Image (cartoon, rainbow, N blue to C red):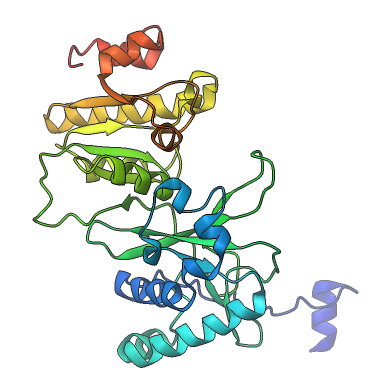
Amino acid sequence: MFHHEKSLFGDKPLPSRSKPPPKKAELAPIEIRDFAYRKLIALSPSTRFSEIIEGPKGLRCRQILNFEDFGSLPPTSEERRELANIIRASINRNFPDYVRKFRTSICGVPGFWIDEKGKSQLWSDKNYSFPLMLIPYRNSTGMIQACQIRFMNHFPETEVRYVWLSTPKKSGSISCGSPIHFVRPLTESISFNKPFLVTEGALKASTIQNHFPEFNVVAVGGISSSHKELIKALRFLPLIIAFDNDYSNNSQVLRQLVRLICARFSDSLNHNYNPNLSVLSWSSDFNGIDEAIINNQEIEIVSFSHWITKNDLSLNPEIADIMCYNII
């Protein structure tokens, strides 16, 4: 037998029988994720750290006063591990059928994972010297489907400031994707005749909602994120876009904005509805609409055709294609 194996493989060692890769976790149902994230916010509220509330980029300066809707992540991995243990035990108690079926409780909740010793972990195993704001992303019924983290440091603006509470490369963990955030649940009390305003980022969306209660404000994680999902969610509904002003000097940002606009017009043709698209406009001295609001700048709603003329975009080939349809 050994002689036969040697003749097959020469003097090379026999190929090892490696273990199959661990089964990829499945995204937990929204009820589980909502429970876990609400528990996390209750255990580690935004008010734990003054920088999150009162800092130069904190909630108060953004005119966001519902502090209880936001949370924080402890800077140390040890504290985060303790929170993960508490939340895991709480899910075990409250969702026993789910735990028995999938033999897990937190692996399907983005941001949570199990280390090689079987210990519960929450997000990174690094320690930080500054607070971390926790920003929930809610679905149309108000349930928390994912969270973002904002680093409350004072690094240059070029540094990464926002990341998802997501650890897809960790053992047994999973990505949260890039979901759409609804500032207010779409209940019967909200009129669907009100325009839906879309912007970038949940914090910015909260500032806008406080200033413009007549809108239903939604947010995407970034200008290039969730176009398909956004178009589908707001199909047939009046839409106002309010993305940052940097599209005027950043060709990549402009390309993504035009891509979103084209998707809206294409969808309106495919499903036979008026695209009903407008744009919020404010001084170019302020990049984000939240900055314009905080600084009491004039903000106006302009038609899509006026926005094209104002920004000299009529020669953009994709915009030109839209104009050919005579529906703007």
